[in-house]
Image: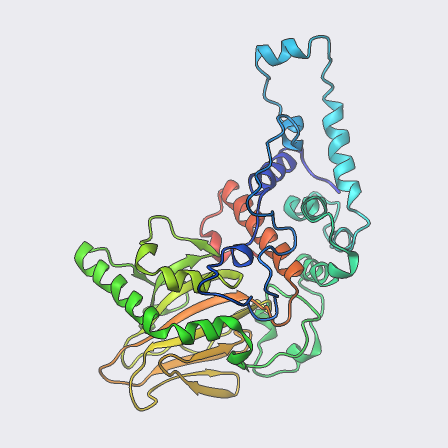
Length: 395
């Protein structure tokens, strides 16, 4: 693998900065509100690779790999302590080579090596070093647990690989638009039964509270003059669809008044929030989102009706199936299917609570944590590289 020192140092620095990464959905839970774990993920607080709560590890000075690779001069006192020690720059290159080689035989390492660009100047340095970073971050992950992650990597690095037949042969799933694909997730369907997820149960059980919190946000916007509704994609949300964003790319929004919506926030954090958005969506009267599909088969979308026009005037079609929103009830669906919405009311808005999250029905906690780690690193790497609009380009 041809990895430049500058790219390696950048990636290792970023990896070190999120070294204590532990997904919010696995350990940020209010026991008074949530007695059970999210659907399919178990009820234990710390997921795979999560740090144990309550114990803080002491930092070991100079123990990080990035400290060894950094070319910055040490201060004079440090040099005095190491008097007589000759620093050999070749050791840096040797360490990088060993780092790359240590994970080359893993499933993910072999997936990267199979890329058409592997080892060439055109290879993406992010993915070239990823096997080593994942092996270091998840040392207890077994090879059988990494197979579908490796499949994701193969498809990411070689878009010409064939997709599974259930996507290619389905006229309602535009496979040309798939851009983030994990093979082997099993049967897909336009709509899933919301009762199988604890998320949907919590949302419905707390509907009245969530609605009050939504109105608290509206009142805050009115008194402060800070309109938090925004269009969050470049598609065509002149179609009357705007969002109060509570999470973007899985992260909380800086300076957002979360104290006004604590229950909503805690419920959303019971699932591994994925890219894109989580928040309150509103659709203006006599508007709709035109037919489209989203290209990530690792995510599901849940929406609960907050304010819905009477008479079944607001609906969503996903693939061949059409459902109507109802207040306090959830719709759970797969956006790799083509979908469109319509609010046919002439005078009432349609408001839903919306969240995109990793598919806890089909994916294992290990797979989800590794994918969150990859997304976090990719986002920070692209920010460091100066890429604008990271949310649309993470993967």
